[in-house]
Image (tube, rainbow, N blue to C red; front, top):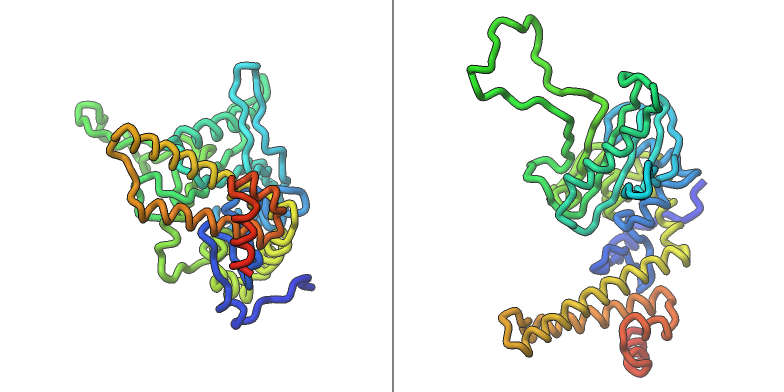
Length: 331
């Protein structure tokens, strides 16, 4: 039985989006999207959310999964010098396959290397000393990105450790094959990259994976339609909405806004310093006004989710009088 009342079409039309992805209704948060890692973990990476994760993985991998076990997302260190990693979600499937999922919002320009590091690190820890190589568990890495990294036309990109086509005829041995040529070295390593930026460009995305991605990015109309035909998405949607009302989750969202504001302020300070030195990277006045407008919008957001004024002062650097004025104009 649903805990929350489903939105009406009239309410859907009144929904708005802030520039950070949250869905708003009458100035209050309705949904924080699962593109925020803490929301993604809350929906798919903790005990009790196995069904959500199972159904999402079935849509991505396009195969039936009987059950799974959500595991500790930290990667093991074999020595003090080893780099430690913390994944967003990690699970072990019934057949022994290890799956992990990472949500990547910011492009650090190292996606290929990052994915390779994690998939190799996990793959090598699935065999013990003296174990047989053929019994190593399959490892599947899934990265959801808010940016386009590889030059591919599809939004769901799948990669394996594959053979290259031989281009030197002197290295080809004729008449040696009596069956199809091998394409991959092993099926034990599999990488999925889901490019949400490309996905958003599709006018009418179809399919089960598309329906799950609508939930993850917070596409309200898409979620509304998907929930009517898919009970698993309906349940995950309810979980997302309940978590979005949680005070701690909204605090996490506040800290996200604070980090964004600090980053923008640092960029602004560096630009202004450059202007003083006569460098050619000065911003136009219109861009500065836009930055000021963004700061006001952040204050409105913090007020709407009930953040105390003292904390807003700390986050924004504005005076109490300035914040009170924004509050007065906002309400």
